[in-house]
Length: 200
Image 1 (tube, rainbow, N blue to C red):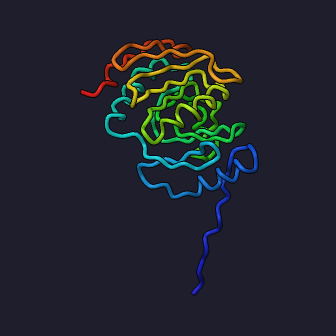
Image 2 (cartoon, rainbow, N blue to C red; image 1 turned 120 degrees about the horizontal axis):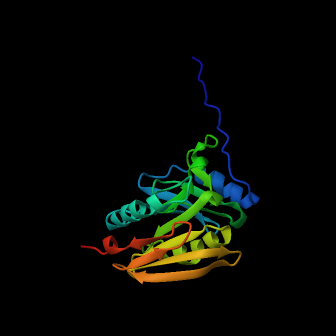
Image 3 (cartoon, one colour; image 1 turned 90 degrees about the horizontal axis):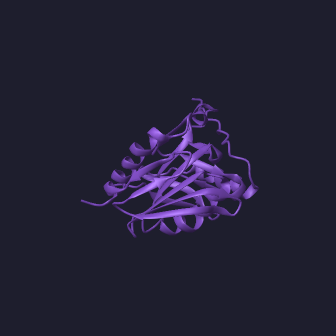
């Protein structure tokens, strides 16, 4: 009897330092359990559960409100996807994101995408991710040029929007408590109603 062995598949990783490429290979080789996501944060692979429960209500509300205002050729979604930032050695799976639709048509990769295609990133904090959302992701998204970063702090019950990215991070921010309306700057240029963010 002849045993046929499957040939190892080459894993395509983004450009970046050798260390970042090795982390990407390790991350993409992981068997991530259903309901979890794996990201590269601060030089480490971090696995955390996807938002659920009340957070899903908030994510659906954000998507429904912002998608009609997405720039031409972009859409807003909350499907699991990994966006890479090779220059900063990071790869994130945002809770909600606005992205150029063409990135999903390029190549055969169905999971890993270029962070430069993002027009919006939304993160909902949890006790396990709050520090990363504020301390690691905030400066990376800003330095990478993501036009709008919306951070819903589920522990402090307020939403902060950051815009005008620069090499040093975002230069502008505005915060509103859950239940208030929050203006979202260009390229979305709309008002987000956070009434649905308040638990019934």
